[in-house]
Image 1: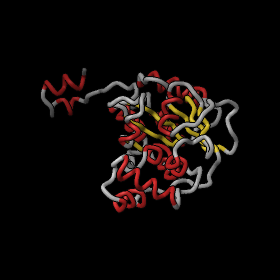
Image 2: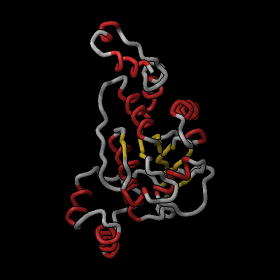
Image 3: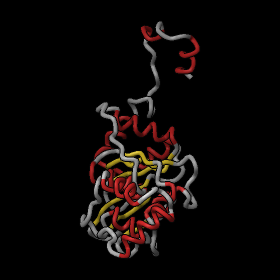
Image 4: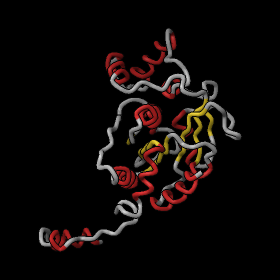
Length: 245
């Protein structure tokens, strides 16, 4: 269970508030989990703060989240009509149902039928191997994670920043294997517990090994900056002082 050691190290390195969140699609439920029904955006906060949340079609409190996680079909009939009215006239996140349709159909589809349980755990207590490691963090911490991820390959992330928080933070990185940075949807940001400076970074676990390997070699980790003499001759003294601070 190497991810438990990873959790301790990355939390200390980034000085995170709370835990990285391990997200696992599972056929079986975890041995222990909190009771109740949760929205995905609530489950992320709960797992960061130490709880294990097992989301299923029955325990998901948001029909949109149920669909985006792949735990159930997209709402149809009266449910679809109600969702459209809410997104356009309630949340007011889109000016029309056409704009809403565009947003949903130009993004990655959900992983329907993949598993019956989506388990959100504090990473240092995760029972199952994570599929995704998610961070609720600030911009500097996000910058460090993105830099550590690309250190080995130089390949930039292909982010998808449109749609619901559960789509951006869970479904998209799970389906594509891409690291994603999410500003969240504005309704999610208003849930108690999220701060104005918070954003989400979701890293598929198969990429997270590279993040951890990079820590000792990259200045976004623990490596110290070394400025070659040839570069020193190219920049002014003030710039050098800022780089060396």
